[in-house]
Image 1 (cartoon, helix red, strand yellow):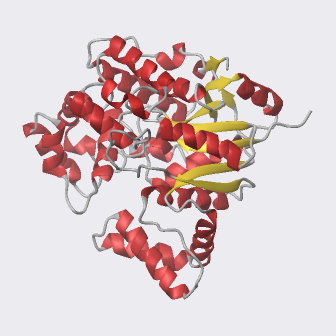
Image 2 (cartoon, helix red, strand yellow; image 1 turned 180 degrees about the horizontal axis):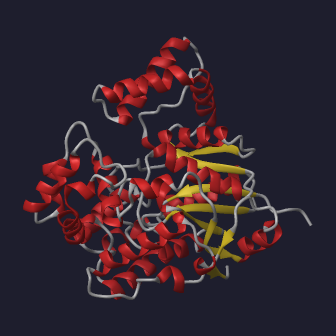
Image 3 (cartoon, helix red, strand yellow; image 1 turned 60 degrees about the vertical axis):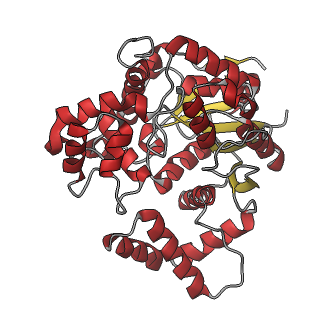
Length: 410
């Protein structure tokens, strides 16, 4: 019997839409894989936001639409900036014995990414120092990264094509390649072009594909799942209708803000300064803004600045909400397990075939495994459940202990 060949994809599925289904299908086809393995963020996301629906609902959507295995990206990596996010995700795919990984990008061609990786690997010391110097002078990290990158291209005087690292998916894709290089993974990188919608584009009526950001924006403006139903598969629509019927609200900061505000005011500036990513006295600004802001939008208008990107502030707020401190972060330097959220029949066959060769322990029951990262994941899930229920319902509290991995019989 020929061994099953697996390709990996790195996802958030917030929520799962037609573009995600296309990505899973094209990843399988482009890499000639039998199995598609998704490493997916849990209940809090890379841009510092609560997920639209929980990780179990999003896993089920994926398994119904072309994904064979879903592993959770632990909180410490799922809510981190791009290099750390990529590091955690790539290490999990490598540990799951993927032969390749495939990401969506604006460039849609792997050659520029390989060229960019070679360029910055050869000029690593100068590149990193340029970034640090720019950040010290007050430039935001994304701008500092691109400035250093442009300097490296100019200095190389090369005619080779390089990836455009001003584009969000290209940036993540480059960090995936860099993370794979850093651990000397044997996985082969592949990319496909994003189609129709860019990362931040609004949902356009008449199209069947829109960005997840655009879909969420359209939904929260209309409060109607029907208004955005053309952008995602039928299974997603059914799952979102079920969620809405059972829980009334979807995840966003407007819903979670009362609990965030309470936490900021209860903790006070001194304890807020111990939270991961909170730095340079911004805890005092947070506290003053929470005292006088009744909504999340009002709060953000008082704390945003040129120095801190919206995303960076939201990551700080996510860590405040979940209690993720610098001390906890120091205990988590790499993924230490493969947390199984769901599988198809083919996925189960792959696990049975490879279980002795996985590079990290496979966890399907959290009660049987404990370490700082797992404890943080469970705690974050409980805090998410509290926010979604707006303090009125406890059904999702402790779900990590109650929910077995989803088995989708395709």
